[in-house]
Image (cartoon, rainbow, N blue to C red; front, side, top):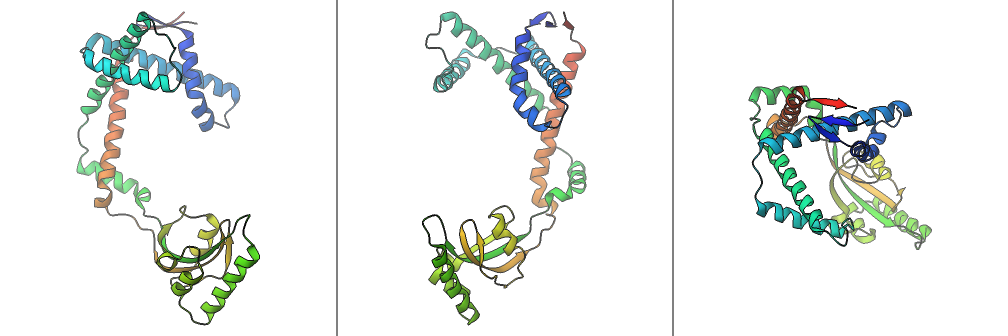
Length: 285
């Protein structure tokens, strides 16, 4: 089956290439989908992508000002260098090959400028729109829980005598129970003695899970017993805790404005493509 868009014939191989380009991400997102349905939908999406690209290219070729030769030459030189580095460029390029590459580059630059122009028509979101987005999405603006933690650590690996490392940690624990200051013992025994073992504030996901499971369940000024992670033996102390809270609007206003503008840019492009499709003649033969 051959696709014809406004009289331009699109070879089936172009759609197959798009299928292969989309396949890795598509199969990851729709992993549990029925294989037959997955194959059909992937083909449909690829076909639609190709149609949209053709329509935009046709519009740019017919309506957009040509790009300067200097800009084409500069982009061609950069592309040639990249393709050579990736081993994707034939050793010998004919004059016709170079001409076609430069024509494709010139058209692609026109397309890029066209889409930028479409997106630049998007204005700034109103204060009301920003506030509405903030109220409807407060959960995503919540700062994570943090703890300020210090630790005494003896690292272990295949070269380390674990029994000896644990023995040193027992000495540190005994001295803690006898009243010696935690930071003093960190400087004396720890493999990371800097700042008295103080790691500063951490959030979940920064450290290994075994470490976080302990420190996020300690109270302020509480010291743990000896525990083990994949890095060795630890004793931890929590100095402070910051409970997660929703950020003030002013703290996140800039990110909301950027998100709303991006949404509007995507919609502007979608609307532009819909307009092109509404007047297009698309056939399959």
